[in-house]
Image 1: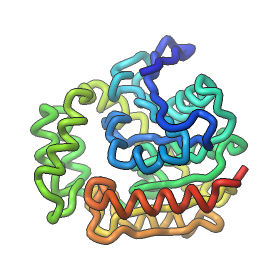
Image 2: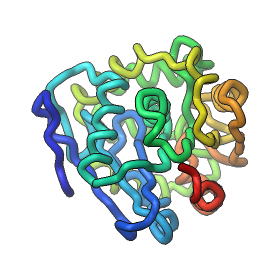
Image 3: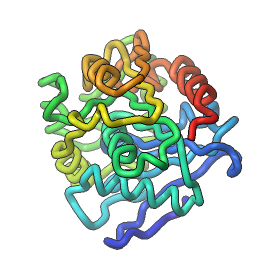
Image 4: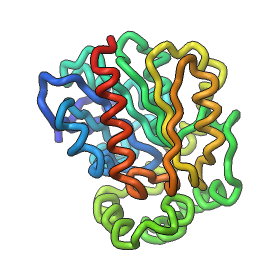
Length: 269
């Protein structure tokens, strides 16, 4: 995995799949998850695009680095630096959950670099978000438990009841070797909880797709409706029988939605 060094000495890991001369897609992962957790979507996306994944500060192969708490602004700047290192001027930006906050910050801070925006299972900032109190309590306990304990406790908030246990454990096989430390997790939580983009949503001019699981128990669907309602021209797709980790609950459906979106916006500049 390539690594870039940031001015504060943080070393940010990233990787690229697909043709280097194809339009770029930047995938930004959520709280405590490694970039490897995009694995169910990358094969379909990389058929016609250069897919770039970033391990956010505190997660994956980037791990714990200086600068805690990790602000959304800092993580967005990391992503833009990765695009620089990859020699990519513009990209379709896709963010899930906390990664959706980072994606919003990217389009605010560098709109000229965003060909299109896709916000998955995310919200406009905690201050204006509709949250599930039980889910928030579960997240607050995460920093006090092992990765296995946290993963078990999170199942009802992450996965639909119909999703096979075997598929959930496939996710864990990818996540656990790259698990965020408790310090990394808390640094992301503290930084992301201070961010608010609600009052800037109507300033987003990039073509925008909002995707949300109809049964998201972690970030309730009302948040997706808020984003789609406030971003000019945004489209909203609700995924049936999908909870928060919708690309595991409904991998085929989500892949098709994203591929179709990217194809429709291939010429966006």
